[in-house]
Image 1 (cartoon, rainbow, N blue to C red):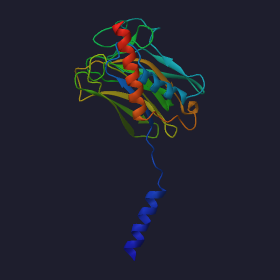
Image 2 (cartoon, one colour; image 1 turned 120 degrees about the horizontal axis):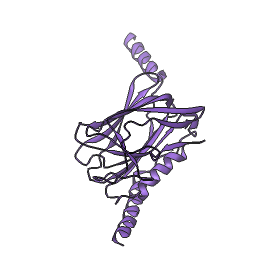
Image 3 (cartoon, rainbow, N blue to C red; image 1 turned 180 degrees about the horizontal axis):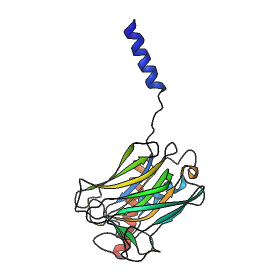
Image 4 (spheres, rainbow, N blue to C red; image 1 turned 90 degrees about the horizontal axis):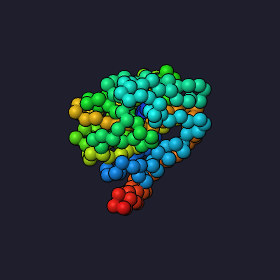
Length: 237
């Protein structure tokens, strides 16, 4: 009888404990985009943005001079400016090089050869999205480590394009949690260089309830195929 009571109590405690829901993620990639934004990748970003409201700001790095290391970024939050501090050996670049390219304008934030960097925010955020180019073409993969305002971390695996010149969009939205820092980790580490553009940030007050549900994998693949076919026709022309 005592054993049943203890087990029942443990079950009740587990069920009553608050669950930590994972962030909603938005992802699509094109391994051969031919230096353009293709259908599935654009659709993933559109879905991400459709879950946000208000004056949402995107950083395209166009206002920074070439070779600017770790530029200071600012975004529009629901109750004021969100400033972001980059730490690492990355810099702003204005070129098309080794598979990395801008998704708007001409400039990108390019990591150093280690691939790792971090972004710290003066105000906790709950939404973050970006375009990434040339990620994982030498066998490494990108992982985002999110630092929770309440303590602890959450790791999100972005993936590895595995081809030179690949393009992806990745975003997360978490209406139930907020984060003060994001590490961009190049795993297992070293040797790879990534390109980033069009970073979008939002705080919890800028999230629609509930967030838009990400496209099913089948729909993303269909859009990707259509986008790839269209890009191939433009390339051939």
